[in-house]
Length: 157
Image (cartoon, rainbow, N blue to C red; front, side, top):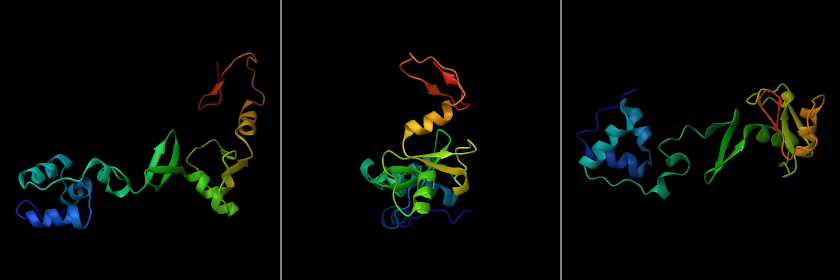
């Protein structure tokens, strides 16, 4: 929803950006315009932009989408300092009441990577155990140096 036109109010625009710490995208959404239009007014009013180090991390990033990221079909949640964690791992940690070890691996039982309900998650003590589950009943060459599972479960050599 458009809030009001800022094109005649340099101080209001500066305050939104520097004091309230809204990013360019958030300001653009307030007015129903693109990021480039907002940047145009920043340049016109000679309002300095935050440095890359100030603006690229977390909520200050102009591409911030609430801390949710989608990577390889998995849902990741922003933690801090630009780091994300798979939502399935967070759900499992909450269920167990502790953090996962670096050897533990969370598996989606139904194969749907963004179905992070606890009843759809299974914890493995190692990634090797997890891969063994996927390899059961599959034929593959034992002398291969690397085997990769596709998203459909077929073995690629």
